[in-house]
Image (cartoon, rainbow over all chains, first blue to last red; front, side):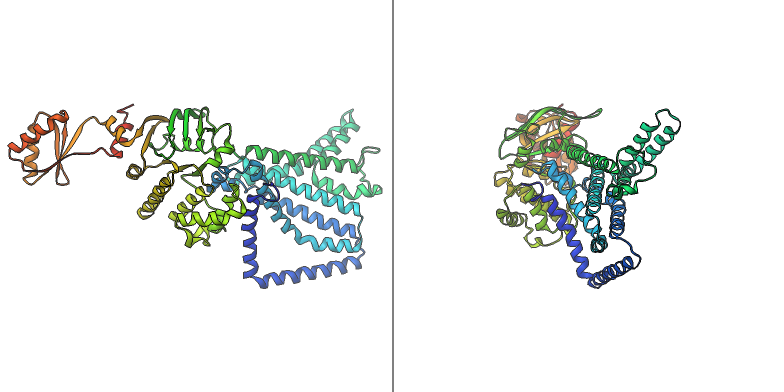
Length: 276
Length: 308
């Protein structure tokens, strides 16, 4: 049985959620139609406004990606951190664990179902991205920001899922998941500020400033802010260390860090799901 | 079919199961009895591969639950004492999910689901949402789920808890049917009369230790410390009690439900002499039977520590 293509956990969760969506669309078709009209109006307004005020495709694209990133980080921990502990609380997890499904099938099925759900929510910003593409955009900026967005959300989801396996109470799991994602996103800024302050009076000024930049780049928010600079070196931020590593290196550092963190969180969840 | 060898499970300082050894043959219906906290659920969870034992080993059909848990999960059907159901899932979808989880091939799944629904008398609820089913129906649905992969051993932890009398009777009949189908059933319950009627063997657990196990009648004989006689009379019962109490082999006598229950401390061979004696003193006896020791009596006797 393929863990991705034929995963019963994923199918059950997706079926359950899509039924809910189907019901609401059936029952509130007028609301759905209104939503379509609103999105279409937004599309027209954004397109015309951006053209009138000479807002480039890059700016529009990044605005949409930033919106998706922030909304995703705000929503994903709550969506994902409930995946396992809710089943444990309602007493259905034992039934699942008593089947021949492997830990990986259970964890990946739950993870993917929630990521798909989050993806559907974030698709609301897609019209803006389409407008941006129409206005013209640096392909590298689009690709890298999209990669960073998906990787950040995937990692945040994995960390929240790990919390769900670790804690029995839903409220605790959600609270710790938000805290963990908060530390990942905001912690590097605090650490970098401390290192920068230390660099101000330490004889190791330059290495410390470079370390501060490296630490700061571990935050996906910081890395996202650096994306335009990767393709426009002229826009180098004034606080960057002269002749230090490029913005591209810092973004790469963030990508690698996020990938490692996400992989660790998923691996840990797979190992822990039967022990919690 | 089920073999438990020196199984011990500790939770920090608490020893939930203490050096438990047990063998259950194929086709047995084994009743696992014990007070709350005796270690029944822990034992069943170990057999279902949901808990790792601290020491010892357990085998299902000669497959180790610790070394080959994935194989064991195909051999057992597990029904916990408390279980939740998924929201927004219909009965057939619920079963379809677990059938897929048990690797029942997609082509066979529909047929298998129809079969277990019929067996558990839930065919009419096929398209009902699981959340909307009554407690008894949910229990039956869980049992249907347990049967999807045609397991050799059923591990049922308090399956009748919380059910009304009708649902209990229906569940009991269903379990009898499954036993006829050759399933080995390992069932824990607090409702002892039902177990007595259904199980051919029992094991009584107290404080994690197996106090006694074997066929019900053998255990009853083993733990019997007295003979109780029930005497039906058509004369004055209170007078008959006084007559009985005068006999040297009678320790106590009292009227219960219109019959005289006598605690007889003599040998069995002395019963006819006792009967003759009371007849000669004018007691009009209509019946005399040796009262059977039921499972509740056995349980009370054993868990008081009389045997251990």
